[in-house]
Amino acid sequence: MRKTVSYVLVLAGAAVMLLPFVAALGNSLKSFAQYIQVPPAWLPDPVQWDNYAEVWRRTPFGLYLVNSLVIAVLAVAGNVLTSAMVGHSLARMRLPGKQALLTMALGTMMLPTVITIVPNFLLFRSLGWLDSMLPLIVPYWLATPIGIFLMRQTFLGIPKDFEEAAGLDGANPWQVFWRIHLPLAKPALATLAVFTFTTSWKAVLEPTIYLTSPENYTLPVGVLSLKGQFVGNDQLVTAAAMMSLLPMLIVFVLAQRYFVRGTMSAGLKG
Amino acid sequence: MTVLTRRSGQVAAGPRPPARRRRSGERAWAFAFASPYLLHLVALAAWPLLASLFFSMTEYDLMSPPRFVGFGNFTRLFGDPVFWRTLGNTAYFAVLFVPAQTALALALAVALNQRLRGMALFRAAYFVPVVSSWVVVAYVADAVFNPQTGIANQVLGLLGLPAENWLQDPALVIPTLAAVAVWKGVGYMAVLFLAGLQAIPEERYEAAKIDGASAWNRFRYITLPGISGTTFLVLVLTSIETLQSFEQVFVMTDGGPHGASELTVLYLYRQGFQFFQMGYASAVAWVLFVLVLALTLVQFRLQRRWVHYA
Image (cartoon, chains in turn red, orange):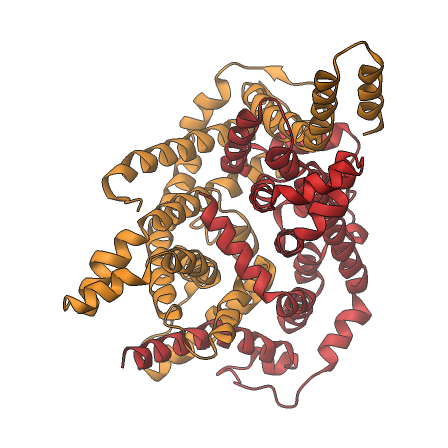
């Protein structure tokens, strides 16, 4: 009985989650006349697949896609590597001031982004990095607090025996980290990777502030700029938005369990 | 990396006892491993905090060097009715959004925790908005709340109710934004709650059942206290984020209509990156920072009254 109620509620909720996407997908396949028709048409008829082709024909959509992918992949690589290194030093190495560093990591996790917007812009401006991908990538190469906590937790859980066996062979700490600990931490690394990919892929504020030339735009900023180009033809912008979601959806479907695990570990941290 | 390795080599050459030598070598390695975060602390934490405090007391338009004006920006800020209105808008948005999302996420988590069949599929449905950017969500929301072509007015029409202007209505824009934000974020928060629920030992429920406790009483006296820690965390995180909400309004309304949805961070963005008043924008950032900090401290203080750690 209780299960039935839960079933109905969860199902209704899932419909509320997905129906708007279906409606937007429908909009993206309408002709302009159908899109502005009142009362609105529920389903596109005929289905205008050409909207998607038109976005590719008339906009640098492919360029936005490549920019987003390059930035996301480099951000992921940087965050996974450096957060694992820092997490390792906090979990397994003789680091003086370890406790202070942990406290500061917790502090920076709570540090509101609002305080960093202007100073970071000025910092990257003085480095000559404006209108480049660097401000969107380099911060991830300096480790993120959430990544550090996740990796520290993971490395704390790996038994010491592995390390000692390797230490006897005269391996240096980097080799211990790279050959023994990293491979054992694969699920956590995957979790951090999908988390970072999502954050980078979704970002609107930072690319808006740092990127000025259209050829450097990422997908969110690029799609947003199409509003001006396709004045009123929002069915085309909707098509572009739907396409910008697709790579994210693919990553999500392939790595769903890591998304859930990542969210849960973020929650358990506090 | 190479620098530090070389330094540890030098130490090894010195006339020190082997144990100590090994220890300082280990330390050098540890610092090398921690170095990305040490740089992070300097460049991405200490610098922004100090720099924004400094710039908040200057006038800086990026062209001429910053000019010190003391608390001038703050005096101007506190006398600016637009700033106060953005704070009011932000508070209104938070008051609608935070409790609604928390309650719905909890309900959803309880339902999802019943080990239903096809659970993974449901969870996926709730996560699609979570992984979507606000730009995607803006067009998805347009399919619902567009006054002419959206589903929402269609549904109201079927129920015999008058159509609404949603995001174009100054009185409805913030409630509509809050509803969309709940829709986008509820899946993420539900998974946080799910983690908390699964940490409650099953035996407690078994024992309560044997004692004849009703479903509601089990929820009230086992589930709620059991997840109070998670609830606290969710509340702290969402309030911090909500006070800094920017992308949603930037993409969906640009603060309109007539500033009715201009939130404080959008105001900051405009002052800094459209009018290039970096000093004034920094002052806005500091006021908001202090507010976020105060709210977090209050929540930590209140926590003692209602959070039970098992």
